[in-house]
Image (tube, rainbow, N blue to C red; front, side, top):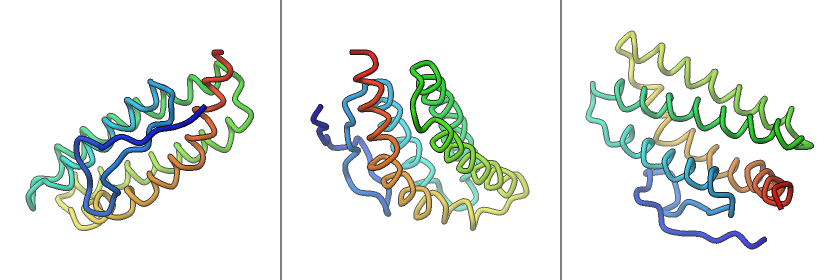
Length: 140
């Protein structure tokens, strides 16, 4: 299956201006939504990151839960590795939410502008690409 790339509705400062389409609709939709919510967090004015970050974090928890459920349902061979990576990211996100609850934005802002975009594009190109191909074949 050939994957395509389409322009994202938005792009983060440290992210590419496209979201790779993996050819698996549920994942592709979640990835486009992730970038849009990430962009909203990146654009939040100083002192106002908490709400957009919370929306981004909520989406990530739902996005990863959907992906984890699909991998489990179809017996994905790298389930353990992929779900552990999701759990690791959600732990970092929870730490950023705790910082924001205390009025500390610096680390969370760095996370949305640099760290998460870098991780996300690598994750899409590796783990998610393999997962999408596997799920598409499993569903035939």
